Every structure is written in C-alpha cells, then in structure tokens.
Image (cartoon, rainbow, N blue to C red; front, side):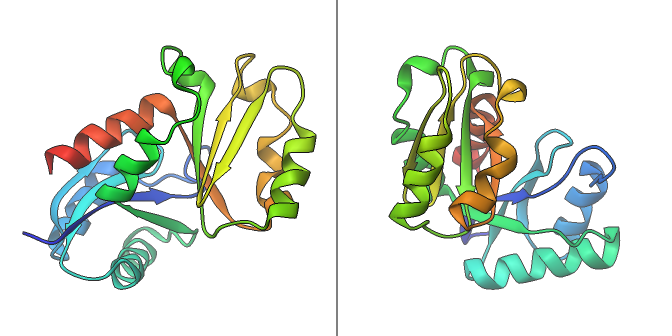
Length: 178
C-alpha cells in the first residue's frame, strides 16, 4: 500500500493496560493499513495509510477500542516528522546512553509561559528543550529518579507520550524501511 507512513504511539500502555502486539498488528492489517509493524509491548506501531493523519488516528482508535477495549490517547507522527524529530535532537552527546534521553510527542505546541514553568522545575543534571510538538528530555541520573515526568502534561497543558532514544531510533529505522 502506498500512502503516508505514520508512527503510531499509544499512550498509557504498560502495567495493567496491555495492547498485545501480534493481535494489534493483525487487526490493523485486516483493516487495510499497509506495512504494519509493531515494536515491543509498550504501544508502538508503524503503518502506511492512504488517509489523512486525522482520519488514520480516528480509524486506529476505533479499531483498538472495538477489538481490545483500549480507549486512551493515540499520537500519530508522519515518517517525515519523525525524521525531523531525530535530526533536531538538541542533546546529541546523550545518544550513546539512549535510556537517558527521551522524546515526548506533544498533542499541541505548548505556550511559552508553560514551557518556562516546566524548565523551572528541572533539577540536578536534568535538561529539557521544547521544540514545537516535541519535548526532548535528558536525564543522566535516570528517568525513574526524575520528578518531572508525572507533571509534564499538567504543567505544559498538553497531553504527551514519551519514548526513550533507543525506541525513537528503532521506530525511525522501521519507518524508513517502510
């Protein structure tokens, strides 16, 4: 199938909320999406769609609600937007430790005051940059130790979903191969 290649990021997968990847891959393929691939059990897929991003998101949301009872936010990023996200990484020195670098895909561009409020909350060696609809977050002391991730959506006033740089690069390779 030709069309736009999208990276599909499901929010809130993990722990009690599971989205089994093999059945997800099968369901998306059965519904007419092309070149469907999934990456690990944390809510990541790559697919080709002949529809717009809005229509593709609506169809994916409908499929996962109907087949899996999954009703959380879904973020869609085109292959070109994802490649730009990778290229614009403001912390290239951190890619060697990919679990310390995260990209948060934001539902919308946050206001400048909200970005400043989030930056003021960073502590220790944490660094962050908001670039359009992407928040880059470098946490050399570990993501789990940071107090920032649980408040990012509230402080920025927009929904987000995060992936560590290892996942970012895996999804990039998958999208480029599609």
